[in-house]
Image 1 (tube, one colour):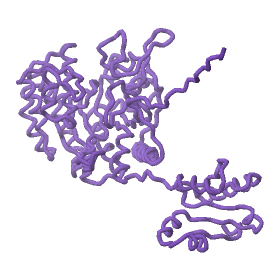
Image 2: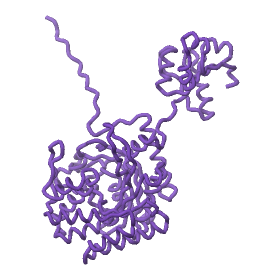
Image 3: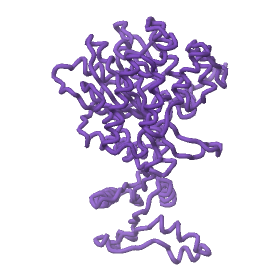
Length: 484
């Protein structure tokens, strides 16, 4: 009887939905963007902070509808002591926990910046990932408009450091207190039910750029089905409330002073609306005094930010560069980052308000936009490849690569087991500008041959046949080892 052969299980190599692999040019562009932003923050006196990827779910403070299973919007699981833990969904909530845990010894105001991955358990889509890298800067312990204005200036400075020119971006500013005044005027109650309604209004307005006012009107009302058929519950406003909110979002102009004048009558007699207007005026005055009213900043009431913890000024960095999408259609990149004031987040731990404000951007989407525009480079030259033509001469090859690196030249020794033809193909795939060739002939003569692959590629179109190519050996030179 023939024994049945057991089939070996081989998992299918597949990337999870909403996650991405970054390699080569795009990864280089991301690293360059992070370095540019970190340079701005460091120059302004911010200190680096790194926190754990995992936090206790109750410390994250996300507005979750299901307390028994807090995984709405986050990736969560129970620890061995049956406490819910979750991957951080941003870098701000972990900062609040860090400050509360180490409050007394920390300098106040605390100025910190952070870089790291965050995770969102949300439906992925074009440009929307479940994991992405954020870069944050925050000031904790500084009340008043000056700290908010500085964050807006920092956001503009990051855009400048990223290689964007005037007119290619704008920092759009608003104040959550103004929307609170508008919603209070249409009867949204200051209760837990009203807080849920407020969050849905915020998330609806946050989609204005992407969906347009007609779709947002549905989200402010009964709700909306998207293209896939998924239904999003609406905020439940009536027709009067929907129009009041949309009218508020349309009040922005390119002039700081004109927008403030347009917003004044919308606030009515609301005291919280007056506070918000006073804060916006103070920010506008500081921006004008510092010269940031040159098109880099504007007040835009449609900016609300989708997270529920903001308590005052909010802002977004908007890329105004026209490009084309994968289908060749005109497209704009839109938001590249944002932030605002969140005075109540640390109060969850300490029971008293701790003023805080910050700016954050997601690296992947921003870097992809800059890379597509040819900003921040991204495509780095490959290393010079020292070919390994004789197995017993590896020590000599390593020595040559070390000499090149000591001279500031990126270099590597070929580590595969193939012959010269395959090694040349490898160097070409690596984008190597040149290869170093030392075989038996060169070694016995004490020489080194260097082949310029970039020049050789340029000259290849001028060569008529293989004989001319072999005899001429374009872009290839040899000489004594000591002369290189």
